[in-house]
Amino acid sequence: MPPKPKFPPGVTPCDKCPIRKLEGFRRFTPEELAFMMEFKSGELAAEAGTTILSEGSDGPHLYTLLSGWIFKYKTLEDGRRQVTNFGLPGDLIGLQASMFDAMTHSVEALTDVTLCVLPRAKIWPLYKNFEGLAFDVTWLAAREEAMLTEYLATVGQRNSMERIAFVLLDLFRRAQRSGLVKKGEVTLPIAQHHLADTIGFSLVHTNKVLQKLRRTGCFNWTNSKFVMRDEAKLAGIAMASEPMEGVRPFL
Image 1 (spheres, one colour):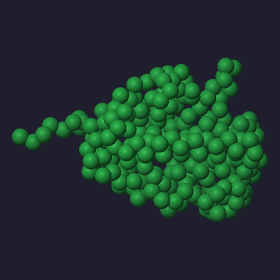
Image 2 (cartoon, rainbow, N blue to C red; image 1 turned 30 degrees about the vertical axis):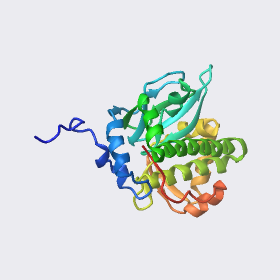
Image 3 (cartoon, rainbow, N blue to C red; image 1 turned 90 degrees about the vertical axis):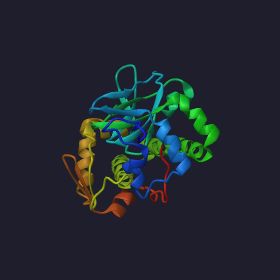
Image 4 (cartoon, rainbow, N blue to C red; image 1 turned 90 degrees about the horizontal axis):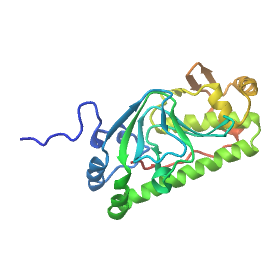
């Protein structure tokens, strides 16, 4: 009698994960893959606008974003919001709560999303028995810090044109690595209020600067359709460095 599948129909097993097929992501060893097949306990589907993790929460799981987009944000007592980062397929979510018992920011689904559920209790066997995967978790945490540094520099030092150019360039490059860009075109699901909350400007000023940036001809952005026309020129406006090369890990 063949072994009973671990997951019900419709749930993606790790050995069939579409992210594993992308050139920009590290391949698991057979032993790592077997562990991840046991590590993953299921999937969570959430509609756009769903709060996945709340500031102050202490969830029992980590998540890998299998499909869709999320964003992370911090809310002040008076309701003002700072978007700190975005998440695309392959990104790890909830590590902060697993290490420090409580989230210091919230996570919301920007589109409909599917997340791989990874029980927090199994993170310690991962560190103990799989040094490659342990390095991957450390790498992902270090990458998150590096990205926060870039976004902090953007809000603190880049001018209005540079801020918007940087965010759009960063999201395009990350979408490209996640296999979402086809012939220079990607569905970019952020609205102008997300952009405003990321760069620290009012919605009116964000719209004004965005229109000015459009006139440079670097890109076309109509509704959610974003087409890159001149990445080098946009990178020059953003004062951005070259994109990270090589493969990156994911869980």
